[in-house]
Image (cartoon, rainbow, N blue to C red; front, side, top):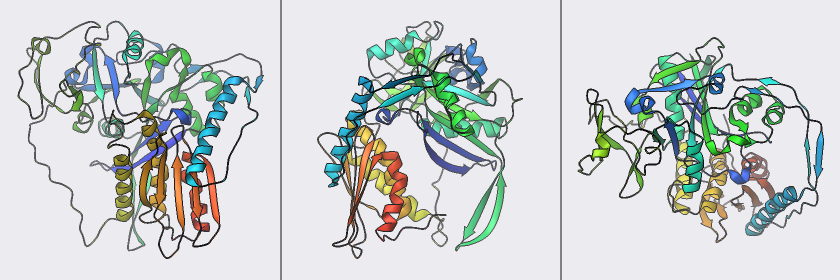
Length: 495
Protein backbone atom coordinates (compact mmCIF):
# COMPACT_ATOMS: atom_id res chain seq x y z
CA UNK A 1 0.00 0.00 0.00
CA UNK A 2 1.31 3.43 -0.97
CA UNK A 3 1.17 6.50 1.25
CA UNK A 4 -2.40 7.59 1.96
CA UNK A 5 -4.09 10.24 -0.11
CA UNK A 6 -4.58 13.12 2.34
CA UNK A 7 -6.51 16.30 1.60
CA UNK A 8 -6.38 18.93 4.31
CA UNK A 9 -9.70 20.76 4.28
CA UNK A 10 -8.48 23.91 5.97
CA UNK A 11 -8.50 25.49 9.41
CA UNK A 12 -10.89 27.76 11.17
CA UNK A 13 -11.07 29.31 14.63
CA UNK A 14 -14.41 28.78 16.34
CA UNK A 15 -16.10 31.16 18.78
CA UNK A 16 -14.26 29.59 21.72
CA UNK A 17 -10.89 30.38 20.09
CA UNK A 18 -10.10 26.74 19.26
CA UNK A 19 -8.31 25.93 16.01
CA UNK A 20 -10.43 23.32 14.21
CA UNK A 21 -8.96 21.23 11.39
CA UNK A 22 -10.23 18.28 9.33
CA UNK A 23 -8.41 16.06 6.83
CA UNK A 24 -9.87 13.62 4.30
CA UNK A 25 -8.04 10.27 4.22
CA UNK A 26 -8.30 7.76 1.36
CA UNK A 27 -6.24 4.54 1.44
CA UNK A 28 -8.04 3.01 -1.52
CA UNK A 29 -6.27 2.25 -4.78
CA UNK A 30 -6.39 5.25 -7.14
CA UNK A 31 -8.82 3.51 -9.50
CA UNK A 32 -11.29 3.22 -6.60
CA UNK A 33 -11.23 6.93 -5.67
CA UNK A 34 -14.88 7.54 -6.49
CA UNK A 35 -16.52 10.48 -4.70
CA UNK A 36 -18.35 9.64 -1.47
CA UNK A 37 -21.19 12.06 -0.79
CA UNK A 38 -23.84 10.16 1.20
CA UNK A 39 -23.35 8.05 4.32
CA UNK A 40 -25.92 5.95 6.15
CA UNK A 41 -25.87 5.13 9.86
CA UNK A 42 -27.73 2.20 11.40
CA UNK A 43 -28.49 2.15 15.11
CA UNK A 44 -31.09 1.42 17.75
CA UNK A 45 -33.90 4.00 17.71
CA UNK A 46 -33.06 5.08 21.27
CA UNK A 47 -29.62 6.22 20.08
CA UNK A 48 -30.80 8.10 17.00
CA UNK A 49 -29.74 11.80 17.14
CA UNK A 50 -33.32 13.03 16.78
CA UNK A 51 -34.34 10.99 19.84
CA UNK A 52 -31.30 11.05 22.13
CA UNK A 53 -30.06 14.48 20.96
CA UNK A 54 -26.56 13.03 21.38
CA UNK A 55 -23.82 11.44 19.29
CA UNK A 56 -21.56 8.78 20.77
CA UNK A 57 -17.89 8.38 19.89
CA UNK A 58 -15.84 5.49 21.29
CA UNK A 59 -12.29 4.19 21.69
CA UNK A 60 -11.39 1.36 19.28
CA UNK A 61 -11.11 -1.18 22.11
CA UNK A 62 -14.89 -0.90 22.64
CA UNK A 63 -15.47 -2.03 19.06
CA UNK A 64 -14.35 -5.50 20.20
CA UNK A 65 -17.36 -5.58 22.53
CA UNK A 66 -21.04 -4.90 22.04
CA UNK A 67 -21.83 -1.22 22.07
CA UNK A 68 -24.58 0.90 20.57
CA UNK A 69 -23.73 2.85 17.42
CA UNK A 70 -20.61 0.75 16.86
CA UNK A 71 -19.64 -1.38 13.90
CA UNK A 72 -18.26 -4.37 15.74
CA UNK A 73 -14.95 -6.06 14.94
CA UNK A 74 -13.49 -8.59 17.45
CA UNK A 75 -9.99 -7.70 16.25
CA UNK A 76 -10.35 -3.92 16.55
CA UNK A 77 -7.27 -2.34 18.14
CA UNK A 78 -5.16 -5.49 17.75
CA UNK A 79 -3.50 -7.09 14.75
CA UNK A 80 -1.25 -10.13 14.40
CA UNK A 81 0.11 -12.41 11.69
CA UNK A 82 2.37 -15.43 11.51
CA UNK A 83 3.58 -16.04 7.95
CA UNK A 84 6.79 -16.64 6.05
CA UNK A 85 8.12 -14.42 3.28
CA UNK A 86 6.42 -15.12 -0.05
CA UNK A 87 6.86 -13.65 -3.51
CA UNK A 88 4.69 -13.65 -6.59
CA UNK A 89 6.11 -12.55 -9.94
CA UNK A 90 3.91 -11.80 -12.95
CA UNK A 91 0.68 -12.93 -11.36
CA UNK A 92 -2.05 -12.66 -14.05
CA UNK A 93 -4.22 -10.37 -11.89
CA UNK A 94 -1.31 -8.03 -11.17
CA UNK A 95 -0.31 -7.87 -14.83
CA UNK A 96 -3.90 -7.22 -15.89
CA UNK A 97 -4.19 -4.33 -13.41
CA UNK A 98 -0.85 -2.83 -14.46
CA UNK A 99 -1.72 -3.02 -18.15
CA UNK A 100 -5.13 -1.47 -17.53
CA UNK A 101 -3.39 1.50 -15.93
CA UNK A 102 -0.91 1.58 -18.82
CA UNK A 103 -3.81 1.82 -21.26
CA UNK A 104 -5.31 4.79 -19.42
CA UNK A 105 -1.97 6.59 -19.12
CA UNK A 106 -1.32 6.16 -22.83
CA UNK A 107 -4.81 7.40 -23.71
CA UNK A 108 -4.28 10.47 -21.52
CA UNK A 109 -0.94 11.14 -23.25
CA UNK A 110 -2.59 10.83 -26.66
CA UNK A 111 -5.34 13.32 -25.72
CA UNK A 112 -2.73 15.72 -24.32
CA UNK A 113 -0.54 15.49 -27.41
CA UNK A 114 2.34 13.87 -25.52
CA UNK A 115 4.50 11.19 -27.20
CA UNK A 116 5.23 9.35 -23.93
CA UNK A 117 3.83 5.82 -23.61
CA UNK A 118 4.35 3.01 -21.08
CA UNK A 119 4.17 -0.77 -21.32
CA UNK A 120 4.53 -2.91 -18.17
CA UNK A 121 6.19 -6.25 -18.89
CA UNK A 122 6.69 -7.67 -15.39
CA UNK A 123 5.15 -7.19 -11.92
CA UNK A 124 6.51 -8.42 -8.59
CA UNK A 125 4.49 -8.74 -5.36
CA UNK A 126 5.95 -9.63 -1.94
CA UNK A 127 4.84 -9.98 1.72
CA UNK A 128 6.93 -9.95 4.89
CA UNK A 129 6.56 -11.39 8.38
CA UNK A 130 5.72 -8.84 11.12
CA UNK A 131 4.95 -8.68 14.85
CA UNK A 132 1.87 -8.28 17.03
CA UNK A 133 0.43 -4.77 17.10
CA UNK A 134 -1.81 -2.89 19.53
CA UNK A 135 -3.13 0.51 18.54
CA UNK A 136 -5.90 3.07 18.96
CA UNK A 137 -5.45 4.00 22.63
CA UNK A 138 -5.39 7.75 21.92
CA UNK A 139 -8.43 8.44 19.79
CA UNK A 140 -12.18 8.08 19.43
CA UNK A 141 -14.05 6.80 16.40
CA UNK A 142 -17.50 7.44 15.00
CA UNK A 143 -18.45 5.06 12.21
CA UNK A 144 -21.08 5.16 9.50
CA UNK A 145 -21.34 3.36 6.15
CA UNK A 146 -21.07 4.39 2.52
CA UNK A 147 -24.63 4.27 1.18
CA UNK A 148 -25.25 1.00 -0.76
CA UNK A 149 -25.84 1.57 -4.48
CA UNK A 150 -28.26 -1.29 -5.19
CA UNK A 151 -30.50 -3.88 -3.53
CA UNK A 152 -27.80 -6.58 -3.30
CA UNK A 153 -25.36 -4.25 -1.56
CA UNK A 154 -28.14 -3.10 0.77
CA UNK A 155 -28.98 -6.69 1.76
CA UNK A 156 -25.34 -7.55 2.46
CA UNK A 157 -24.86 -4.34 4.44
CA UNK A 158 -27.96 -4.93 6.60
CA UNK A 159 -26.83 -8.48 7.32
CA UNK A 160 -23.71 -7.10 9.04
CA UNK A 161 -25.74 -5.00 11.48
CA UNK A 162 -27.00 -6.30 14.87
CA UNK A 163 -30.60 -7.56 14.89
CA UNK A 164 -31.80 -4.84 17.27
CA UNK A 165 -30.70 -2.02 14.96
CA UNK A 166 -34.09 -0.74 13.81
CA UNK A 167 -33.28 2.78 12.65
CA UNK A 168 -31.11 4.57 10.10
CA UNK A 169 -30.19 8.18 9.38
CA UNK A 170 -28.06 9.87 6.74
CA UNK A 171 -25.07 12.18 6.42
CA UNK A 172 -25.08 14.06 3.11
CA UNK A 173 -22.12 16.35 3.84
CA UNK A 174 -19.27 14.23 5.32
CA UNK A 175 -16.74 17.11 5.29
CA UNK A 176 -19.03 19.44 7.23
CA UNK A 177 -19.98 16.59 9.56
CA UNK A 178 -16.29 16.10 10.39
CA UNK A 179 -15.83 19.79 11.11
CA UNK A 180 -18.94 19.89 13.29
CA UNK A 181 -17.72 16.82 15.20
CA UNK A 182 -14.35 18.46 15.87
CA UNK A 183 -16.06 21.61 17.16
CA UNK A 184 -18.41 19.61 19.40
CA UNK A 185 -15.50 17.76 21.02
CA UNK A 186 -13.49 20.96 21.53
CA UNK A 187 -16.41 22.91 22.99
CA UNK A 188 -18.04 20.18 25.10
CA UNK A 189 -15.06 18.11 26.28
CA UNK A 190 -12.10 20.37 25.59
CA UNK A 191 -9.67 20.52 22.66
CA UNK A 192 -7.43 17.45 22.55
CA UNK A 193 -4.55 18.64 20.36
CA UNK A 194 -1.31 20.46 21.02
CA UNK A 195 -1.37 24.29 21.07
CA UNK A 196 -0.50 25.85 17.71
CA UNK A 197 0.61 29.36 16.77
CA UNK A 198 -1.16 31.36 14.08
CA UNK A 199 0.78 34.17 12.42
CA UNK A 200 -1.19 37.13 11.11
CA UNK A 201 0.25 39.56 8.57
CA UNK A 202 -0.97 42.78 6.99
CA UNK A 203 0.65 44.43 3.97
CA UNK A 204 3.25 41.67 3.97
CA UNK A 205 4.47 42.39 7.51
CA UNK A 206 4.10 40.10 10.52
CA UNK A 207 1.86 41.96 12.94
CA UNK A 208 0.51 39.40 15.41
CA UNK A 209 1.04 35.83 16.65
CA UNK A 210 -1.76 34.06 18.51
CA UNK A 211 -1.79 30.64 20.18
CA UNK A 212 -4.81 28.35 19.99
CA UNK A 213 -5.86 24.99 21.41
CA UNK A 214 -6.46 22.57 18.53
CA UNK A 215 -8.75 19.72 17.55
CA UNK A 216 -8.14 17.51 14.51
CA UNK A 217 -10.57 15.03 12.93
CA UNK A 218 -9.61 12.65 10.12
CA UNK A 219 -12.33 11.05 8.02
CA UNK A 220 -12.61 8.72 5.06
CA UNK A 221 -13.55 5.23 3.87
CA UNK A 222 -12.19 2.08 5.48
CA UNK A 223 -10.20 -0.22 3.19
CA UNK A 224 -10.45 -3.99 3.53
CA UNK A 225 -7.40 -6.21 3.08
CA UNK A 226 -6.54 -9.86 3.64
CA UNK A 227 -3.61 -8.99 5.94
CA UNK A 228 -4.33 -5.92 8.12
CA UNK A 229 -1.28 -6.65 10.25
CA UNK A 230 1.09 -6.48 7.31
CA UNK A 231 -0.56 -3.37 5.91
CA UNK A 232 -0.37 -1.52 9.24
CA UNK A 233 3.14 -2.64 10.17
CA UNK A 234 4.50 -1.48 6.80
CA UNK A 235 3.78 2.12 7.80
CA UNK A 236 6.73 4.42 7.07
CA UNK A 237 6.34 6.73 10.05
CA UNK A 238 4.13 7.40 13.08
CA UNK A 239 1.57 9.45 11.13
CA UNK A 240 1.27 6.75 8.46
CA UNK A 241 0.83 4.17 11.25
CA UNK A 242 -2.05 6.12 12.84
CA UNK A 243 -3.85 6.49 9.52
CA UNK A 244 -3.49 2.84 8.54
CA UNK A 245 -4.51 1.64 12.01
CA UNK A 246 -7.71 3.66 11.87
CA UNK A 247 -8.75 3.02 8.26
CA UNK A 248 -7.73 -0.61 7.59
CA UNK A 249 -9.81 -3.69 8.47
CA UNK A 250 -9.89 -7.34 7.50
CA UNK A 251 -11.54 -8.22 4.21
CA UNK A 252 -14.22 -10.32 5.94
CA UNK A 253 -15.87 -7.09 7.13
CA UNK A 254 -16.07 -5.61 3.63
CA UNK A 255 -19.90 -5.62 3.54
CA UNK A 256 -19.98 -3.13 6.45
CA UNK A 257 -18.92 -0.47 3.88
CA UNK A 258 -17.52 1.52 6.78
CA UNK A 259 -16.66 5.23 6.67
CA UNK A 260 -14.90 6.55 9.77
CA UNK A 261 -14.45 9.82 11.61
CA UNK A 262 -11.31 9.72 13.76
CA UNK A 263 -11.09 12.22 16.63
CA UNK A 264 -7.45 12.56 17.66
CA UNK A 265 -6.33 13.14 21.26
CA UNK A 266 -2.92 13.33 22.93
CA UNK A 267 -4.18 11.95 26.25
CA UNK A 268 -4.42 8.19 26.88
CA UNK A 269 -6.47 8.70 30.06
CA UNK A 270 -9.54 10.13 28.30
CA UNK A 271 -12.87 8.23 28.69
CA UNK A 272 -13.63 5.25 26.46
CA UNK A 273 -16.83 6.91 25.24
CA UNK A 274 -18.11 10.46 24.85
CA UNK A 275 -21.78 11.36 24.43
CA UNK A 276 -21.83 14.74 22.67
CA UNK A 277 -24.81 17.05 22.31
CA UNK A 278 -25.61 17.41 18.60
CA UNK A 279 -24.93 20.96 17.39
CA UNK A 280 -26.91 22.92 14.81
CA UNK A 281 -23.87 22.76 12.51
CA UNK A 282 -23.93 18.97 12.60
CA UNK A 283 -27.70 18.86 12.29
CA UNK A 284 -27.35 20.71 8.99
CA UNK A 285 -25.36 17.78 7.56
CA UNK A 286 -28.17 15.28 8.26
CA UNK A 287 -30.96 15.17 5.69
CA UNK A 288 -33.98 13.14 4.74
CA UNK A 289 -35.28 12.00 1.36
CA UNK A 290 -38.22 13.51 -0.51
CA UNK A 291 -40.22 10.47 -1.64
CA UNK A 292 -41.61 12.28 -4.70
CA UNK A 293 -38.25 13.35 -6.12
CA UNK A 294 -35.96 10.79 -4.46
CA UNK A 295 -33.75 13.75 -3.61
CA UNK A 296 -32.28 15.03 -0.36
CA UNK A 297 -34.06 17.88 1.44
CA UNK A 298 -33.73 19.54 4.80
CA UNK A 299 -36.61 18.38 7.02
CA UNK A 300 -39.07 20.49 8.97
CA UNK A 301 -39.79 18.54 12.13
CA UNK A 302 -41.99 18.70 15.23
CA UNK A 303 -41.11 16.43 18.14
CA UNK A 304 -43.21 15.63 21.22
CA UNK A 305 -41.29 14.20 24.15
CA UNK A 306 -44.44 13.19 26.03
CA UNK A 307 -46.05 11.22 23.22
CA UNK A 308 -42.79 10.18 21.49
CA UNK A 309 -44.31 10.86 18.07
CA UNK A 310 -42.91 12.56 15.00
CA UNK A 311 -44.38 14.84 12.35
CA UNK A 312 -42.46 15.50 9.14
CA UNK A 313 -43.09 17.78 6.19
CA UNK A 314 -40.78 18.60 3.30
CA UNK A 315 -39.73 22.25 3.15
CA UNK A 316 -42.04 24.25 0.90
CA UNK A 317 -44.80 21.62 0.87
CA UNK A 318 -47.88 21.00 3.00
CA UNK A 319 -48.43 17.40 3.97
CA UNK A 320 -50.03 15.44 6.78
CA UNK A 321 -48.03 12.81 8.68
CA UNK A 322 -48.99 9.24 7.99
CA UNK A 323 -49.81 6.69 10.66
CA UNK A 324 -46.38 5.11 10.12
CA UNK A 325 -44.69 8.44 10.80
CA UNK A 326 -46.64 8.91 14.02
CA UNK A 327 -45.96 5.48 15.48
CA UNK A 328 -42.47 4.31 16.52
CA UNK A 329 -41.40 1.28 14.48
CA UNK A 330 -39.23 -1.61 15.62
CA UNK A 331 -37.20 -4.40 14.10
CA UNK A 332 -35.40 -4.65 10.74
CA UNK A 333 -38.45 -3.44 8.81
CA UNK A 334 -37.38 0.16 9.45
CA UNK A 335 -33.86 -0.50 8.18
CA UNK A 336 -35.24 -1.52 4.80
CA UNK A 337 -37.92 1.16 4.61
CA UNK A 338 -37.64 3.27 1.43
CA UNK A 339 -38.11 6.66 3.15
CA UNK A 340 -35.46 8.31 5.29
CA UNK A 341 -36.32 9.11 8.92
CA UNK A 342 -36.96 12.74 9.93
CA UNK A 343 -34.53 14.73 12.03
CA UNK A 344 -35.39 17.10 14.84
CA UNK A 345 -34.52 20.79 14.91
CA UNK A 346 -34.76 21.93 18.54
CA UNK A 347 -34.09 25.66 18.07
CA UNK A 348 -36.77 28.22 17.09
CA UNK A 349 -37.58 28.62 13.42
CA UNK A 350 -36.69 31.68 11.34
CA UNK A 351 -33.66 32.84 13.36
CA UNK A 352 -32.18 35.70 11.27
CA UNK A 353 -28.50 35.33 10.42
CA UNK A 354 -26.91 37.97 8.19
CA UNK A 355 -24.19 37.11 5.64
CA UNK A 356 -20.55 37.79 6.40
CA UNK A 357 -19.33 40.90 4.57
CA UNK A 358 -15.74 41.73 3.68
CA UNK A 359 -14.31 45.15 4.45
CA UNK A 360 -13.44 46.27 0.91
CA UNK A 361 -10.65 48.48 2.28
CA UNK A 362 -8.97 45.57 4.05
CA UNK A 363 -9.68 42.34 2.16
CA UNK A 364 -8.38 39.10 3.70
CA UNK A 365 -5.06 37.74 2.51
CA UNK A 366 -5.50 35.02 -0.11
CA UNK A 367 -8.93 36.20 -1.31
CA UNK A 368 -7.75 36.20 -4.94
CA UNK A 369 -6.61 32.59 -4.69
CA UNK A 370 -9.84 31.57 -2.91
CA UNK A 371 -11.94 33.20 -5.63
CA UNK A 372 -9.90 31.66 -8.44
CA UNK A 373 -10.12 28.20 -6.88
CA UNK A 374 -13.88 28.47 -6.33
CA UNK A 375 -14.47 29.54 -9.94
CA UNK A 376 -12.28 26.75 -11.34
CA UNK A 377 -13.87 23.99 -9.22
CA UNK A 378 -17.38 25.23 -10.08
CA UNK A 379 -16.49 25.18 -13.78
CA UNK A 380 -15.26 21.59 -13.39
CA UNK A 381 -18.49 20.53 -11.69
CA UNK A 382 -20.69 22.12 -14.32
CA UNK A 383 -18.59 20.48 -17.05
CA UNK A 384 -19.42 17.03 -15.67
CA UNK A 385 -23.11 17.74 -15.19
CA UNK A 386 -23.42 19.91 -12.12
CA UNK A 387 -22.59 18.99 -8.53
CA UNK A 388 -20.51 15.80 -8.28
CA UNK A 389 -23.19 14.20 -6.10
CA UNK A 390 -25.61 14.30 -9.05
CA UNK A 391 -26.62 10.68 -9.60
CA UNK A 392 -27.13 11.29 -13.31
CA UNK A 393 -23.41 11.86 -13.82
CA UNK A 394 -21.64 8.81 -15.30
CA UNK A 395 -19.52 7.06 -12.66
CA UNK A 396 -16.43 7.23 -14.88
CA UNK A 397 -16.80 10.98 -15.41
CA UNK A 398 -17.40 11.56 -11.70
CA UNK A 399 -14.27 9.56 -10.90
CA UNK A 400 -12.16 11.56 -13.39
CA UNK A 401 -13.48 14.79 -11.88
CA UNK A 402 -12.60 13.55 -8.39
CA UNK A 403 -9.02 12.82 -9.50
CA UNK A 404 -8.45 16.04 -11.41
CA UNK A 405 -9.78 18.35 -8.66
CA UNK A 406 -6.53 18.32 -6.56
CA UNK A 407 -4.60 19.21 -9.73
CA UNK A 408 -6.92 22.16 -10.36
CA UNK A 409 -6.68 23.37 -6.76
CA UNK A 410 -2.88 23.14 -6.88
CA UNK A 411 -2.72 25.15 -10.11
CA UNK A 412 -4.96 27.85 -8.61
CA UNK A 413 -2.53 28.16 -5.70
CA UNK A 414 0.40 28.65 -8.11
CA UNK A 415 -0.82 31.37 -10.47
CA UNK A 416 -3.87 33.45 -11.27
CA UNK A 417 -6.72 32.30 -13.54
CA UNK A 418 -5.09 29.02 -14.67
CA UNK A 419 -8.05 27.26 -16.34
CA UNK A 420 -9.36 28.13 -19.80
CA UNK A 421 -11.96 25.37 -20.19
CA UNK A 422 -12.88 21.73 -19.51
CA UNK A 423 -13.96 19.03 -21.94
CA UNK A 424 -15.32 15.53 -21.25
CA UNK A 425 -14.48 12.82 -23.81
CA UNK A 426 -16.76 9.95 -24.80
CA UNK A 427 -14.64 7.50 -22.78
CA UNK A 428 -14.94 9.61 -19.60
CA UNK A 429 -11.56 11.40 -19.65
CA UNK A 430 -11.50 15.04 -18.55
CA UNK A 431 -9.32 17.42 -20.56
CA UNK A 432 -8.44 20.79 -18.97
CA UNK A 433 -6.92 23.48 -21.21
CA UNK A 434 -4.68 25.82 -19.25
CA UNK A 435 -4.99 29.59 -19.49
CA UNK A 436 -1.39 30.83 -19.60
CA UNK A 437 -0.53 34.53 -20.09
CA UNK A 438 -0.72 35.59 -23.74
CA UNK A 439 2.63 37.41 -23.69
CA UNK A 440 4.38 34.27 -22.48
CA UNK A 441 3.08 32.20 -25.36
CA UNK A 442 3.00 28.96 -23.37
CA UNK A 443 0.26 26.36 -23.79
CA UNK A 444 -0.74 23.51 -21.55
CA UNK A 445 -3.17 20.61 -21.16
CA UNK A 446 -4.08 18.28 -18.31
CA UNK A 447 -5.81 14.97 -19.07
CA UNK A 448 -7.04 12.63 -16.30
CA UNK A 449 -8.91 9.33 -16.65
CA UNK A 450 -11.36 7.42 -14.41
CA UNK A 451 -8.63 5.21 -12.89
CA UNK A 452 -6.75 8.23 -11.60
CA UNK A 453 -3.86 8.41 -14.05
CA UNK A 454 -3.09 11.47 -16.10
CA UNK A 455 -0.72 13.62 -18.15
CA UNK A 456 0.49 17.21 -18.06
CA UNK A 457 1.74 18.47 -21.42
CA UNK A 458 3.34 21.94 -21.45
CA UNK A 459 4.61 23.91 -24.47
CA UNK A 460 7.15 26.45 -23.23
CA UNK A 461 6.56 29.70 -25.09
CA UNK A 462 6.10 30.40 -28.80
CA UNK A 463 8.26 27.98 -30.76
CA UNK A 464 9.73 26.58 -27.54
CA UNK A 465 10.25 23.01 -26.37
CA UNK A 466 7.61 20.80 -24.80
CA UNK A 467 7.56 18.94 -21.52
CA UNK A 468 5.32 16.09 -20.40
CA UNK A 469 4.85 14.37 -17.08
CA UNK A 470 2.51 11.45 -16.48
CA UNK A 471 1.46 9.21 -13.64
CA UNK A 472 -1.07 9.20 -10.84
CA UNK A 473 -3.10 12.41 -10.80
CA UNK A 474 -2.53 13.26 -7.12
CA UNK A 475 1.23 13.03 -7.67
CA UNK A 476 1.02 15.27 -10.72
CA UNK A 477 -0.67 17.91 -8.55
CA UNK A 478 2.63 18.37 -6.69
CA UNK A 479 5.06 17.70 -9.57
CA UNK A 480 3.66 20.39 -11.87
CA UNK A 481 5.28 23.34 -10.03
CA UNK A 482 8.77 22.55 -11.35
CA UNK A 483 7.46 22.26 -14.91
CA UNK A 484 5.66 25.60 -14.68
CA UNK A 485 8.72 27.35 -13.27
CA UNK A 486 10.86 25.93 -16.04
CA UNK A 487 8.36 27.33 -18.56
CA UNK A 488 8.89 30.81 -17.10
CA UNK A 489 5.35 31.26 -15.85
CA UNK A 490 4.55 33.92 -13.20
CA UNK A 491 3.96 31.56 -10.27
CA UNK A 492 2.41 33.02 -7.14
CA UNK A 493 4.77 32.91 -4.18
CA UNK A 494 3.73 30.37 -1.56
CA UNK A 495 3.53 31.36 2.10
